[in-house]
Image (cartoon, rainbow over all chains, first blue to last red; front, side, top):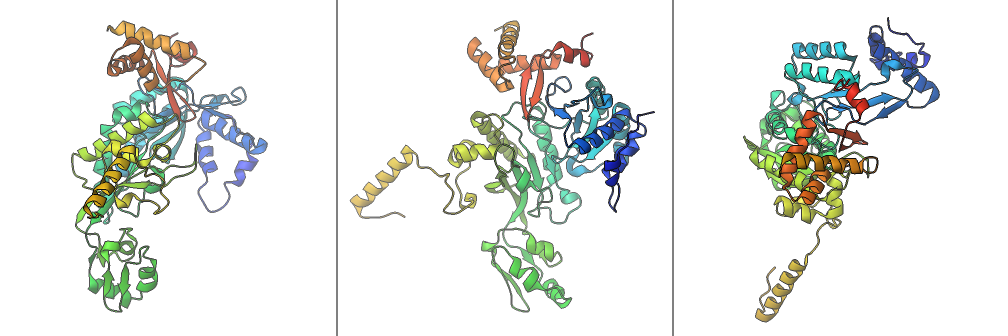
Amino acid sequence: MPKMYDTPLLDELEKGPWPSFVKEIKKCAAKNDMAADELGLLEKSYKTKIGYWKHGGIVGVRGYGGGVIGRYCSIPEEFPGVAHFHTVRINQPSAWFYTTDALRTICDIWDKYGSGLTNFHGSTGDMILLGTRTEALEDIFAELSSRGWDLGGSGSAMRTPSCCVGPARCEWANIDTLELCYQLTQEFQDELHRPAWPYKFKIKIAGCACDCVAAIARADCSIIGTWKGDIKINQDEVRNYVKNGFDIQKWVIDMCPTECMSWDGSTLTIDNANCNRCMHCISKMTKALKPGDEKGATICIGSKAPIVVGALLSWVIVPFIKVEKPYDEIKDLVRKMTEWWDENGKPRERIGEVIERVGMRSFLEYIGVPPQPQQVKEPRRDPFWFFTEEDIEKIKAKEAEEKKTGVYKF
Amino acid sequence: MDTETIKNKIFEILEKAKGKKKLKEKDVIRIASEELNVEKDDVKKVLRDLIEEGKLCYSYTGGASSVEIPSEEYLREKGMIK
């Protein structure tokens, strides 16, 4: 029978209308020593306002450098159940589709070897199994592997790629996010399991600019579905929306970020050349508006949360790329991006930070993408375009030619 | 160059760095390749074999990973030695 602790402070968090993590830990604690001590340790932390966890070190399964995050309690003599309390990350299937049977299998393994506590899902997207001992890791890995599961990424590695539900459940998906996510996961297995880079590298794939996986804010490489050409308008459906009380001016026209739409009382007009494909109008009038037919993706680079330096949002690198099997173009691009970063990055420096330090020019030259207007993030403020000696020679030669001939080229 | 020489060099590099500097996989490959004048891919292959065998392992501090020689205590915890 696990040791039971008095937890007056944690008990407060069971009150109220919402599901409580305390309630769930207590359920586990009734049958598991690790979960019981986890509860006791947390109550002590609440009382003393001190954290008692240490993390990192050499913890993993043989051959892998990621997937297990070592966690130890700093007062194991008081809470022996959580002396080791390692986290195991499991590579989730694309868009987090599981059968109930698969989930039962995972839970059975975790009840057998771990605390029984889980997080569904971690912010990278993996299934997170909370709390196990070092000596159980190889057995957990063997059991998971034999049932077709694999560990996710951690440390200075490619993190488990993740994607939105895409065409499996969403009419707005411009690309097959699930297949692309699966193929990238397979392609970068070595990078995922054997951390060799300066720091983490995340890939997230969203089917459209609604960006349900928040790729633009969280992924070093954000792949976001988009289209070329005009938004398809069904004017009859637009009029139906208005007839049924939809305030098109207030909710769509006035909220268009590029002000490229107008409504004259009977017809909706879109200046497609100025549309930035944000999806706002399409998501507000799903029956009336649809993306254009030529589908693909925009690839952005560099977003991250504030760890070493401040938070960054992703930056457009490739405005439009076709997303077609076997996705060689995208795989090659990701490889080139990571090679450049690996060559130039300092320890714990994310790719977005290296671009800010070294310069966008060097990055674009290495990955072989030409400079394009869509890459300008902040007009008149981007300090990343530097002239080389070679450029200056070319400019001087052009000016001399113009002076000599009297013909000016713009 | 024979595998044993590369293995010994890798251990020598890691022993030297022990307690002073955390070396990434890439650092070990670069140093060994330069000192032995062999291709980086050859060093990488030997390094990976050592990791597969459990003679070396990845370590993790503050989000950054490095390669280390595992301690006896760790090998005992893992049940790899008695």
